[in-house]
Image 1 (cartoon, rainbow, N blue to C red):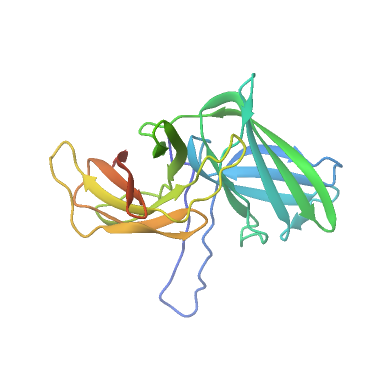
Image 2: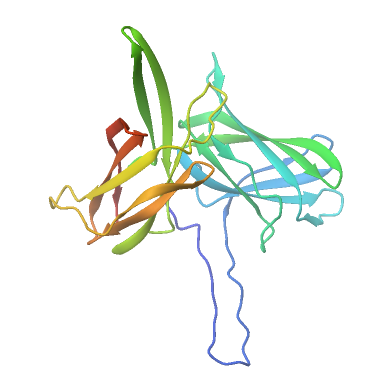
Length: 268
């Protein structure tokens, strides 16, 4: 997955006479649609090609009649994958209600599977006192190598022969880049309540253990992720050198171990 489509420009000066230019983000347009009653034009952008895992997505909304930008709106996302014989959704985060300085409403879609011409997103738009819907269809959602999303299965025996099986999709929130030294480490955890419902999970304990398999060592001074909001767990990971790294995850619910065999691989 290439990250060359994302960059920022920052000009600065140490003199009082020169002004500071704002950071300008540039994204890849992945879809564009007109709302159901042709009132709004809505564009969807991403940092790069859509992939399985945590995708930051950005929407620009304008009045179709005059092209005037709309900076305050409520956008509700409805991602869906058509598997021919059945359909399913995936976790998502509805965009902010106020556009940022560049005019984008930022949200996230956590695609659960790769697919060709199978993923769509309907967007309910509430702006300027009107409510309409837009439809996006994506030609491709790709799988990454290494993966950015895993599924942890929790098998809880209630009584002999009686089990409760819970599935937790876990996505790595990729930073702009990894570096030698202390890095922010962030994951999201959701629960598959049904094929259409993936609520955020807020009550798990996560421990991380970095390992460099090719060199046979780990690293010190890591900070275990803790829940912040909306299923996001944030901590710190320390990489002592470049190369291949595996971040082992130990996940518990209270004192009960769910897994100590989950991991994310990365290379930089």
